[in-house]
Each structure stands twice: as C-alpha cells, then as structure tokens.
Image (cartoon, rainbow, N blue to C red; front, side, top):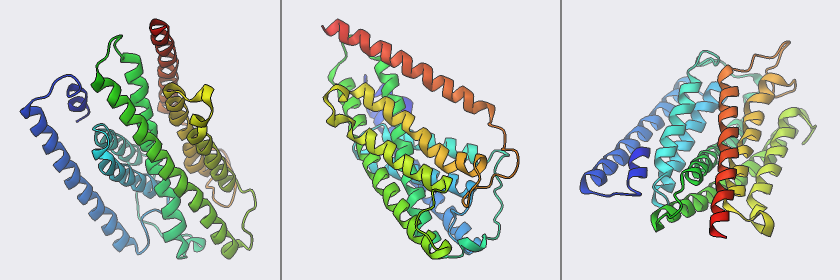
Length: 294
C-alpha cells in the first residue's frame, strides 16, 4: 500500500484505485482480528492485556494501526505507515527477548488503575509512534524531492505535516494525562504522588520533549518543515527510553533491572545510524533546494 500511495502521486488508474480499496478493506479486517486477539487475551488472563513489556508492544501496535485507519481520510500515507509500523512492532514483540506467556500480575498491579493509567499512557505511544514514522517518510520525501515538483508532491508533504501535528497533539495530551493519573495511583499505592523514580522522571522528560516539538512553530526561526520533522522523529527516542530503557537499565519501582543490564540488540545501533544518515542528507538536500529558489 505504501508503494501504491507513492505511485498515485504520479499516476492514477481504476486498477490502482481498486487495489487501494482492497488494501483498506483488508486493513480493517486485520484490525478487527487484532481487537479479537486483545479481547481473547484479556479474557484468558483476567486482566487488561498491557501489563508487561510484550503486551505493551502488542497494544501499541494495535494503537498505531487504529490511528493509521482514523487518519486515512486526512492523508493517504497514514494507513500504509500504520500497517508498516504496527507489523514491525509485532515482529519485534515476538523476538526471543520478550516473554509472550500470560503470567500472574505483580501485587501492586492488582488495581483498577491498571485499566486507566496504563491504558492512557501506553495509548499515547501509538500516535507518537505514527508521528515519528510520518516524519521519517517526510524526510525521505525531502531527500527525493525533484527540483520542479508538482502540486501533488507539495500537498502530500503538507498533509503529512498536518497529520503529524495532530498525532503529536493527541499523543502529548494522553501522555500528560496519563502521567498525572500515575501520580494519583502512586499516592494510593506508595503514599506519595511523586518521588523522582526513573519511570516518573522519564515520563516527565517525554512530556517536556513533545511540548517543545509541538511549540517549535511558534518560534519564527524554527518554523520550518525540516526542523519539525527532525524533532518529531528524534523525539520518539524519549518514549523508547521511558518504555524500555528505564525498565531494563535503571533501578526503581517501575524497573526490571537486576544486576547487569541486558545487552542492547545490535539492530538498534543500525537503526540509529540509518536515521542519523537520513537526517543529515535531508538537511543537506533542503539547503540545496532553498539555494536554488534564491
């Protein structure tokens, strides 16, 4: 579907449109099957399916697909990107470093706040993840942008930017509300609202990072598509640190770190290096384009 969306920038036909409609229908069928899977896991486990690292990744994958479907009417690229990133998260979830078994909950998680706080804060990761992958596609479009591009190319970039801002707005709202709700749960469980636990601290850092990203456009010198997309893409690293880095590398009430931390998978370094190269090339290409205009 991503290939179809790119092809439709240059050429449209009935066959391509029919293929696109079939893809959308299959995406909805897959989403409904995904909902059935989460409901079945909830029924078997007798608790919400977002209580550990594996379930969190699966739940975020479900949310990414949901927002991809919801934003499909705003930009043609949201659904293919949602499918792509959702599938990637599921692939990572089923690697051998996470346990997919249904296990008993820790005593502190036997609370109705598991259904509220964790659901809200993990739900915020989905639109932020979709925004990051949209920013990546926008940077690729900036790199591949022809010197004389037509209106479809420009409109696609503008649509991606607008949907990206919508996704970040929704994600930041959910992240902030989820962080406050976590404080209420902490007061009920541990007798304090805030203790600068690593998870709490990084949740606050993530809120501040995305608040900065969302308000960059208010600074005239930084009100530029390239700056926003770079910030939106790299800001997701704060979410990765909050959701996984804290759990496995820092000690605290929310952490699983015991003794030596687990080794960082090799593919993480390759992904980081690839994103860095794309960022540098996009910056260089954008400078070239602006010089040609001047």
